[in-house]
Length: 426
Image (cartoon, rainbow, N blue to C red; front, side):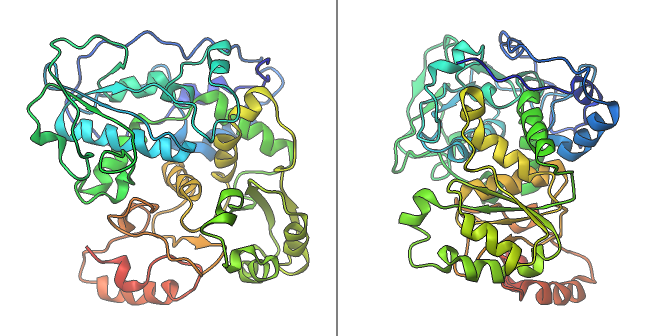
């Protein structure tokens, strides 16, 4: 299947974005051979510089570094010490979380990160073999910019030989047992469910503190591929959506209708439309979902009084458009002025983390949900958008009491996640 052609704003990425601060010492590992430039990208002659700048600012620090941008390695790894963790064999956001937590523990223990191979997970809608046909690697560099990653994280491919071969497969995952306690040179974690499962929200892990140091690490290392950013920009433009001029809603159905959504009002179109009205009234709304629902779209117009509703969930996709549909849908929600997510969905949490990274979710802004019925995870919870201070503001000044009182009024709104007490709990 031929890779769908989309335009890429190359100059967009030349400008780049500086890393917020130095995370550690400069590394010395040699880069592995690059594969990211094999995709043939169409000409940029049909788009103006103003359009390029518009999307450059919309995606912010999600974009790859510019070719001349100087970025320091996050740390100097200990000689011959490596960490390998198989990615969670589930949907993309579980895979993403597996990568993130392993990168963080590699940093914490100063081990070289061995980049795991990608599995045919259930969220992947095309055979993994197609990636090779498109010149893409079967690892995280199918989604994230390889050059940007290797500027920050000391890493080698999983196929690289281990010398010396002093290897240990820990019986518990990194969250249950700190890999820094092991003396073996090469740690290898499986992805099987149970005590070895490599899945956690790194931004909420009580061992990875201060949280914002690790948020900076991940945001510095994991920059989304330029062609994926451009796919999202092109799709938004095709539907007349401009950065900051629409509200994005993620309403997860599909597998959730048989689980978390069962018996919940999230399945009641009338209730959800009435509930989100204060957030979408008089606005253009983009619905990101896995199950198209024309009745819900109609009720957003009639009950919520939205001015326009966009949803491409029913549109048939092929080839790479189908393969990267989840990532493009997530990216489409990033430039929105605000975002309303589905509680307990790592897809929604992934959008929130990317919006924080891009700068479109301003720290201090409470999170909004399509229903008040399900309380999502908080600090030190795997199924969470992160610890409170990674997207809200944790005040430490003498004025904190007054600010907390103000936040109590905000948090009393059912669309927010935390109560005032939870906002500032340790």
